[in-house]
Amino acid sequence: MAILVTGGTGFIGSHTVVELLNAGKEVIIVDNFSNSKPVVLDRIEKITGKRCKLIEADLLDYDKIENIFKENKIESCIHFAGLKAVGESVAIPLRYYHNNITGTLNLLDIMSKYGAKKIVFSSSATVYGKPKSVPIREDADLYTTNPYGETKLMIERILSDLYNSDKEWSVSILRYFNPIGAHESGLIGEDPKGIPNNLLPYIAKVAIGALPCLSVFGNDYNTHDGTGVRDYIHVVDLAIAHLHALERAEKVTGVEHFNIGTGVGYSVLDIVHAYEEAIGEKINYKIVDRRPGDIDECYADPTRAKELLGWQATRGIKEMCRDSANWQKNNPNGYDS
Ligand code: UD1
Image (cartoon, rainbow, N blue to C red; front, side, top):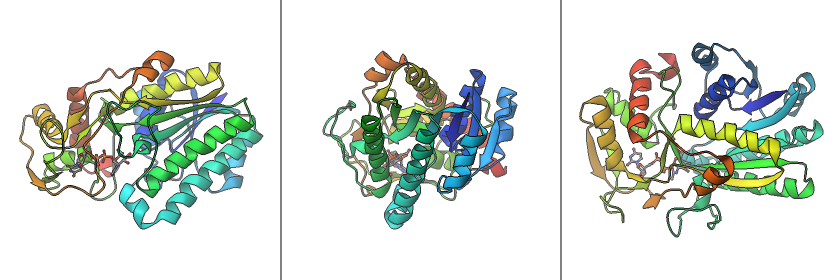
């Protein structure tokens, strides 16, 4: 029986596939390569010594996805596929709703039809909006501030309704905090298109001289040094959380939500300094105005994941910066290097 991984060649997907293959699981990736490349499969093979099946397909193509279920014995799915850029989602909301929601509806309908009723869904801490207090627990208020976040929250609600209608489902909703780092082999990592929006990929480009200077968005937040605080989590720790979630889904039915973070918040300047230490060089940065929509601080209370999944992050900020820098150094142009 196979595990279908949608978006399995993306940043988090590829790291999760490595962990699944290393654990001896049978994996089928479905990806439309809208934000990734087929060469990722070669890299995964280099790391694991295993080549899994990869099917190029879009979740919007119902018939093609149904064929995958017809032709393979699939028992569960880890669902990563989706558009994920906040700013872009504000500019083209209909595309985000159509792609993320309709694609998921297709997938769930087909999974139901073929009796594959176990799913791990990649949600985000973005569903907490501007949290009232930190650390954030899973029962905190939910609201979103942009269409991307809204699609995550809508899918969470769709999954709950689905379970309420059919109690055979096992649904594990993982709310990721800020995934960074890369596989320690330096063979897979984050490869954003164009100029990165997120902090770590931006720092990594400044470090290799591909971008001149990091703009630190505001130093007047209510945090220890005035810069924004986030819960950065090593992508390999995050990937491993999916294996724990799958294991649990094999044992229990229901809908469960888990924060996947370290529980520790670091500021933008903490990260800059940790990165400087990792590479032994200075990072050029300047303080600029706040980025609209940003919040002071956001970090997880990851207790539930520890108690119910038996999972907790083991890699610290040092490993995150080291592995991120190693990936960037080995692949200055990402997978085109
Ligand atoms: C962002 C998204 C979030 C998404 C997550 C994925 C927004 C508002 N939120 O989170 O929905 O789930 O990415 O990883 O976009 N920063 C700088 N300079 C930069 C880039 C970032 O100072 O060039 C600062 C930000 O102000 C923030 C921190 O670094 O304090 C982290 O930013 P980022 O990596 O973009 O993640 P989030 O905004 O937390």
